[in-house]
Image (cartoon, rainbow, N blue to C red; front, side):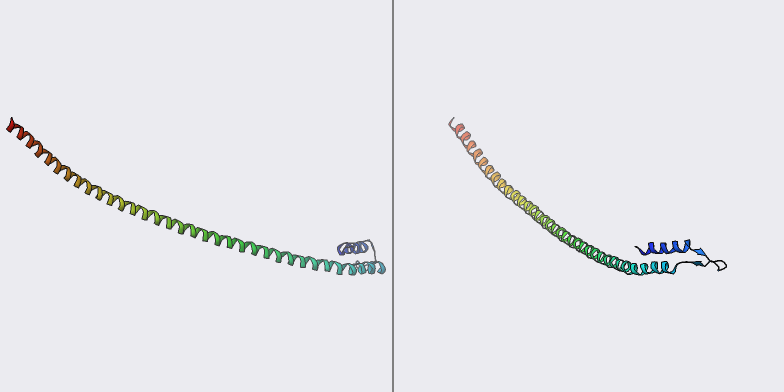
Length: 153
């Protein structure tokens, strides 16, 4: 029986006892019955105290395990955070490198276009000069032909 139940039983015995006249609220109870209940309380107490100690020990163990688990969760979260930051850093570095490569390619492309324009301009000038020279020669030849036909004719 539980200690609380035994204490209630003790209260019931005292409440049911006959009061003694002129004693100021004192009652008469069977000492055997009271001692029997007190013995039962003493017997039940160690079991309940052991149970309470076990509950306290279990509580401590549960709290310690919960603390270990929460520390593991926090440590795991920190590691994932670190990995994500490292990954973000790698992405940033890759983006910077990619931008550098694109910028270099744009610069080289502009230089190649400029060099191509200079080369084409140079070829066009030489071609124009060559065509002008040929045109001049053609005109002279034409003029000579016209002049020689006038002389012959």
